[in-house]
Amino acid sequence: MKKVNDILEEAIYGKPEIRPQERKLFLSTILERIHVALTVKQVVSGNEYTEVAAAMNTKKDVHLYINGHLSYQFYSRYTKLAAKANVPYTIVTPTESTPIGLVVANASHAIQPPTASVFIEDSLYEKDMAPFNQD
Image (cartoon, rainbow, N blue to C red; front, side, top):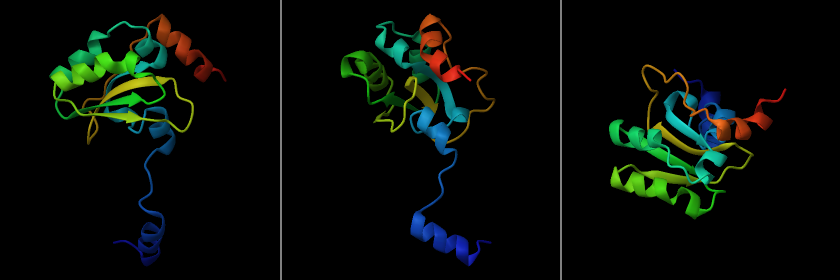
């Protein structure tokens, strides 16, 4: 049962956000919902990653999140794939620096079993993630 203080706090400030840092990194979703994620350089490269299309075509209840700092010309092919697969998408403008350019995630709940690695780890991935992996 909720305490009166908790009810008042929620009424004043709204529901507390779960994993805010993770949501900022992954364009408003959390890691346990993600099927596949591309970095900014991977989206901008012009290469079409088939893993993104496969996730949109084979997984149920998915949503595409796109980094709003990218130019439309770079992510338009993915919005067209989403439209073809009837997958809703959202352009998210991050408030903090993130190497993530695009995410295909479950819209409402965690993936069971969780995906081992959500990233496609190629040379572009390494370039984008290097500044974020420094200690």
